[in-house]
Length: 508
Image (tube, rainbow, N blue to C red):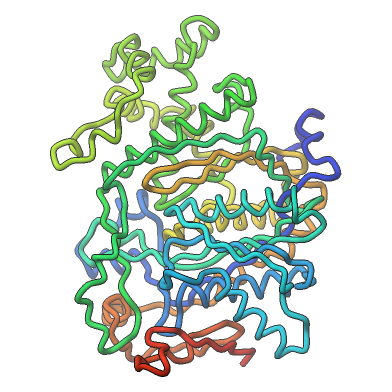
């Protein structure tokens, strides 16, 4: 049973703070079980289960990043009885945009029409509609933008941030089992009912990494769109290098947070009960947090924390690593961007740390300091795949629902959140659970959003993945936005080629 934290943390939820009061999600129904996928592709299920997860979702023929985002926003308005006229900021965080001009205003247009059809007022005409793009970090940046808006010229209003993405990889690539699709919308306001977001105590980091994970427009050239209008959005990526970038940027963002808060790295990490991180696949956040813990042990271990140094030294001995050499590596700050070449990608930024990590994984401390802190909501999101910008908010939603179901007392707890976007940038932001979190969590309905599922056969998966017509899909849209038609006019007097027209499908 989790208990309340000390009074110093309780003070973080005072009146006037800004944070999150609601979460709502949309997940497309088309599901691929990774155990089945392993049979189709002759892959090793035990490894995929432990490293990646259990299943992933795919967007359907009538879905786009905009339809998913709009459905999540409308659900948020319904579930939390939001007055649309109070919403003066609607931010879209995504890396799956298919329009290089408009963004969040497309989502606003869909939601406005659905509200009008119900006889309700639309979102305020005075609403700002920015789109935020930085790989998987766009949603966190949008949340920060919303909080800053409410703290300045948007005081007294409400904001909605929606994180929506479609993660798809070429068949046969190492990223194929880490696909996913979905959207999570967040209600941001003053005096939040879920959690206060403390930007003053957050940490940031960024550094250009050239070829970690990119989506150059050249990828779209020559795609055959004869059967469907959807463009395949496969990234250019380098898996091992991406892991190095994730770890390195997370470490730098943490160091920025430690500096702002004036706290001991190891004492702070040990004090936390729950952490939510960007999760492209199951093993990545585990590795990131474990490396952060080892670095925290090494931060001043020889002078200020003899017990911490001994703990680290014992693992070094077992890994046949010189502790002094490990500490030197940890303070060296490698030029990760310099690895961005065909030859450089073979380099390991922290080889000694990675060797010690292998020993650390088998210790009781690894369970206590890594797995236990990542456990809340962890079982549910094994069935999500990678949602890019929506991955961390989805984990947060699943974790809060699990805490409510298991009658855990989170009130006043610090939930440390990690956002990451390839390219690279990271954000570490503390959330403090509000007194009314139970009431707000009861409206999230994340498990309900996951309940609708259609399991795909191998032929259906291949066809849907490759942008071909899919036979035998047993699914009828309900309570969601879909693509109705796509414009094809391209003449002198009227052009709408490629523009999607949407409609809302009500309950069956």
